Length: 60
Image (cartoon, rainbow, N blue to C red; front, side, top):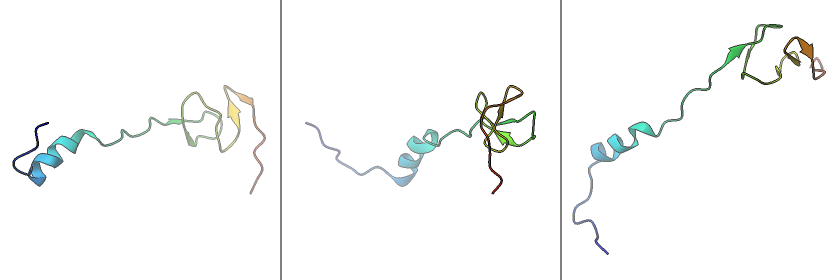
């Protein structure tokens, strides 16, 4: 098995890792309470999905 003869520089290592960052989540606005939420999911702030109340959210 071949082994590296010389060590790779930090610049070379960092160039390879340039594409490893996670993409930002695509958020949408809730049409009921206008808070940010993940698309196609029940709003965690008001509990509504597609204009209907799915989950009762208690006021904390």
